[in-house]
Image (cartoon, rainbow, N blue to C red; front, side, top):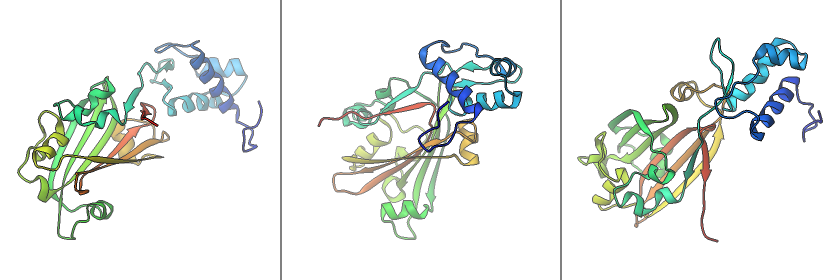
Length: 252
């Protein structure tokens, strides 16, 4: 096995994981198919059981397989969510009463939702909103499931003075969601900015997403501006990196 670009020789566990990954990508193993177990891999590659276990752990961390106690590892059968980053935010989505998730063609279930009013915002949120120290925000926290699997947790921050008394402060915001209600308030989103980065999850994030602590998460922060340039919402999303493809298509 050749060294990688850094000149580092891959470990035996990584070599085995790469071979299994290539077999999955070729279609030798399809969704739901069983892979060789720890003992079979150890015998096949003439390595210790710990090495075979480490190889399988690499695949699990990357979200390619699922492992259950007492059962053979299986290829993950979950279909990746293709998140259409531009189409989902178009006015004809939420403006017609659709959820922005309908652009992704896979509607999620929300199994956890909490709405808190008059919250003192974190400093970075206050700065983006340009709020005075005494001003507060409304926070909407949700966890999203697709096919019964947690895929994302999100916290939306909105100026309390803007949304007080509106449906935005209720669990059910009605057709079109937050953006349709902002339109009702005279502050329809006219422009968005999304910032994407990848990092390791916190203990709390890994627990809420039910993912291994070694798997990275996608941190996507979306800021919505009205036609006057006022920031009307900041949505901070934490996404299972093994569940998503971020798809952006736009004209040249």
